[in-house]
Amino acid sequence: MSAIFNFQSLLIVVLLLICTCAYMRSLYPALLDRNRTGFLGVFWKAARIGERLSPWVGAACLFMSISILFTK
Figure (cartoon, rainbow, N blue to C red):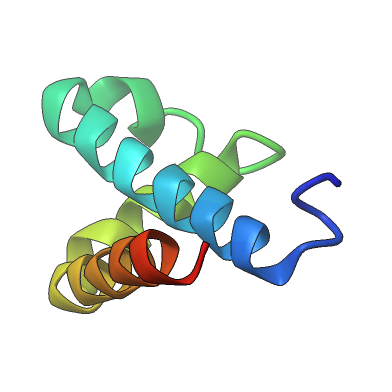
């Protein structure tokens, strides 16, 4: 089953995208800052979400890891 049809897998993919984009922006800020519009703007927006909501994103990652460990 793909991540599109499984809600838990979709949440994991979105959380990983947000965390990865925020980490990549901290290492190479020019890489994501030049692509603020268009399709690649999704990665810039994910990086902004990861930076501004980092305590909430971290809590969501912790909750998802506990959920995966104890429910599967």
